[in-house]
Amino acid sequence: MKLRNAFLPLSTAIALCSCGHSADQDGLGHHHEHGHEGGEMKNEISLCPETADKFGVKTETIQPGPFSPALKVSGEITSSSSSQGTASARSTGVITVARGIEPGATVRQGQAIASVNGKGMAGGDINAQAKASMDAARRELDRLEPLYKEGIVSARDYNAAVAAYEQAKASYSGSSSGSGVTAPIAGVITDLLVKTGQVVNAGDPVAVISQGNGQLTLRADVPARYRGMLASIAGANVVEPQSGTTVTAGRGLSNAANTPAQGGYIPVTFSFDGHGTIPAGTFVDVYLIENAKTDALTVPIAAITEQNGEFYVYRQIDEDCYEKLLVKLGASDGQRVEITSGVEPGMTIVVKGATVVKLAESSAAVPEGHSHNH
Image (tube, rainbow, N blue to C red; front, side, top):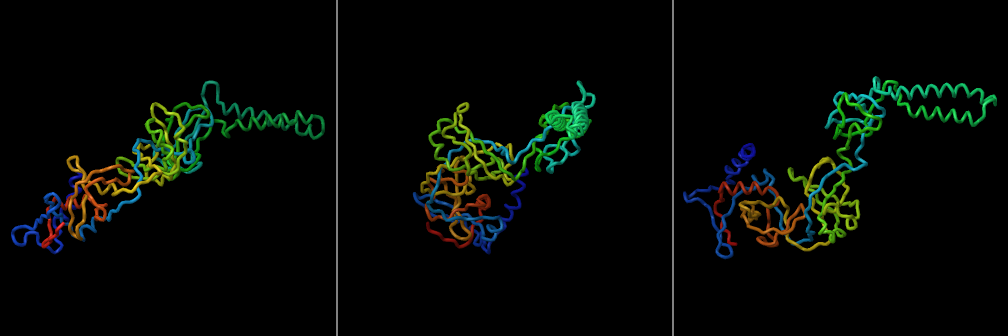
């Protein structure tokens, strides 16, 4: 219902657009028909230039050009290791998550994410034990240092005391009652792995942080029967199915042709800049592009409309007249699609705003005085 209401202002604007013509000036209604091959009659669609420009209708004169058919497979976007970090606990104890820390929260590098308190834990507070060991090693070092300077203690014993102190110091996190968990990088928390009150051990992951505009990794799963074409893959067009957002991934990370199949599929990986367009964790459609190119007549995918299982494009006849053409589709690379029949080189095709022309077709507004012979 919301979608239908969203089109009402657009439909009204198109229906009221007269471009200075009277659609029924003589009472008969100027709904012109023009002959086409095979005796088929096609109706013109009226859309004045002002309305077309207002609603972003764009056209393109199509000509054969280089085109690389693509293999469509499924894939997943993940953060690359360089743009993802994990905040980990530095000691054993009960964790308390800091206020405001949750999935989706933005954090600075070094910002406190949680604290760990080891008091009351079975076996005692490990961090407190580490502090006690460090203090004892410090006292022993302080005792031996003047004796070493006087030559009473050997260098071997003194160096052993220094090493014991440094080792105990490295085991102590800096707080006798626990430790803090901080963000290793600036970014967005994509996964919070613990809850307040949970017991964690030293080294346990607490949160995953991703840099939204950093490098992303694409993993595409290719059926093993297509192994022979993997050596010629030049890149990939990545399409998010819900929004239609498209990005290009052009740098392969693996020698896919020699990668063993896993469950009947060969994993192919690419690295690309995210720029915040498709977030990590998204499942996508992947069009693997080959190096080989052929000449083909293509249009952007946005130029295609579908009705009752058939595909159409809109051809612009003059500045305010269009006609709908039935076409057959060939291969696609995720951005453009090959037209195998229904259009000819040199035709001017609507490549953006085809929905606007489709609504104009429904309004049956036809300009006065047009007489085209095609």
